[in-house]
Image (cartoon, rainbow, N blue to C red; front, side, top):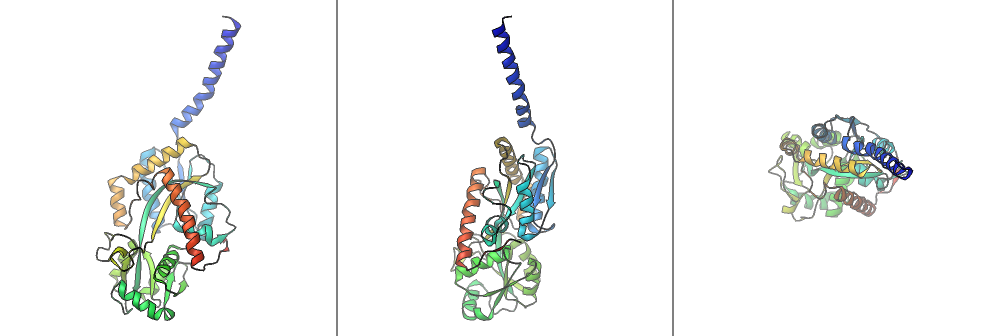
Length: 332
């Protein structure tokens, strides 16, 4: 064998050896458990949603998908941990409209940039929100509420789960759409706000359709309108905003799965496919319906569509918060 041929064969073998590990890595992901960080306490709506998806992903990927709750600082503790994680696909983040989009404008000096430090994988669930009022408020429907609030706004108050929370953002959407000026009362959590609505201490709150089922069944509070284009199955008697004089009133808490920036494309594709397969499972769709959740559009579940959604929502909330006169606060 001449030297030129020998040299050529050695180059081929060397190149093949370098390529094989990459190929095996691409084919075998995931080869160990995956962690999904949830920046909320266990047992909440986002946590329950995440665990439903994690259970399905475990079956799809053949590896355990573990949910870790890291609440605090308006979601920034969990999101900062996710941003610092290795960009290998083994750490994911489940955030929502508040922690991902609104917080980018609500807080200064966050330890991450949501658009620069993360890659969206898919939008995974939308929770239509409900305007719920105290039981003895002298209104029987949304149109009555509009008239009453415009006449008595200075005497009213709303309840939120704190600045940046879903109920806080929903209240901003409602007051901006209706042109209202009503003083908010900030609680440590949504359940406290709901309790005080039921107790007649505050006039109204914006809550998830899933919790509104229990609120309305108590008889101490009244859900008046679904802030969506359609009614929800868990509250079939409550009209949607599309049926009102304000058909463009829209507010749903969308939830999204992300990974740290830099995850390889083949891993992104595999994670996106797994999430989409889970969201098409009949048992998951049934669970969503029971929680008053809807599966996002096919476009929002794609890598490109999720990225577009996040960028547009960051810009949207920046404008809404400025218009509402909410000043940026120091990051917590």
